[in-house]
Image 1 (cartoon, each protein chain N blue to C red):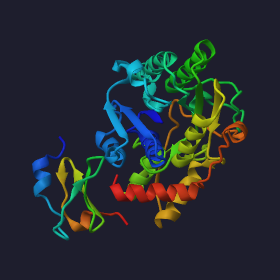
Image 2 (spheres, helix red, strand yellow):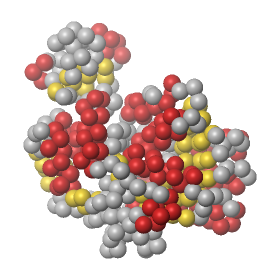
Image 3 (spheres, helix red, strand yellow):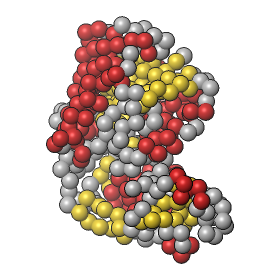
Image 4 (spheres, each protein chain N blue to C red):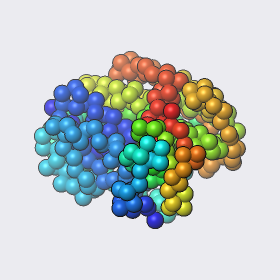
Amino acid sequence: MPISQELLEILVCPKCKGEISLNPSGDGLLCDACRLMYPIRDDIPIMLIDEAIKLD
Amino acid sequence: MIYLVTGVAGFVGSHLAEKLLAAGHSVCGVDKFLDNYPRRFKEWNLAQVSRHANFEFIEKDLVDLDLPALLRDVTCVFHQAAQPGVRSSWGEEFAAYTHNNILATQKLLEASKKSSIQKFVYASSSSVYGDTQDLPTRESGMTRPVSPYGVTKLSAEQLCYLYWKEFSVPTVSLRYFTVYGPRQRPDMFFHILMRAHLRGEEIPIYDDGKQSRDFTFCADIVDGNIAAAEYPGAGEVFNLGGGSRTTVEEVVHMVEQISGRKAKLKMLARQQGDVRHTAAELKLAREKLGFNPKVKLYDGLAQEWEWMQKIGA
């Protein structure tokens, strides 16, 4: 099941507390400011800085 | 000038529409949002052009559209829409390939017959050649596709020729050789490779990695399309390639260099429908269209890597 819009609206980047957005594959949440992607595994967003994928 | 771009939300179609709009033309784009990959990718592809005042978008299947009405004010058609993918074209899925690749093209050609369009550029594929030994492959070489996808692309290409021969529809077909770059479809090899690499996962390599392709950067394909639209001739077929052949193994090394990290590889068996080598003979395209691929593979890969990082694909 894809992540709900309501959940997306309340989630923030755990590092900068800024906005995050869903990536086009629907399996990661992007923080543009930190250049980090928080993976979504089994429909659960993993909002842990240590687990985030560095995009730069 | 109004240009019709079918498959405008796709990889090549969106780049082409952007270039045409930047040149001051008007673009009517059609896309049915095929569900072959997440819609979000296609919406992102369209993000830039959809803000443009000279862009009109129609979300519909070409087969269901009133095409004669659509073509009334159109100068040139760039038919990029297709059901892509070699490996998925076997079995039950084939019906989608005949509908989206053959029937949609036939409908568009039929409507073009009664229109005043100046050029109909058809996006064909190197897959029409199949597993040829004739390398670099010439346009006059044998066409014997090794996938149902290739069969449908060849059928549509032959329809283009037929409508030129019988009804003087000014068609030109372009055989694309493995297009890559930003917005590449998620089922294509570089996208799969970079996505896995970005996540530190294993990269699936089919066969032994020594298979080679003539990789063509998307901006060069766009330039080839525009050159074909301006070409005074018709009823012809041209190869569009990157100008050199590179093995999958070499591509992996380049991505390692660009990203600055070592790739993890997972070797898998060869897939049905995959060809061993492709290489385009570009003599005709160079001479007649003035086609000259400019982007070197390393630079093009760096641009795709940058895009992959940007979108977190």
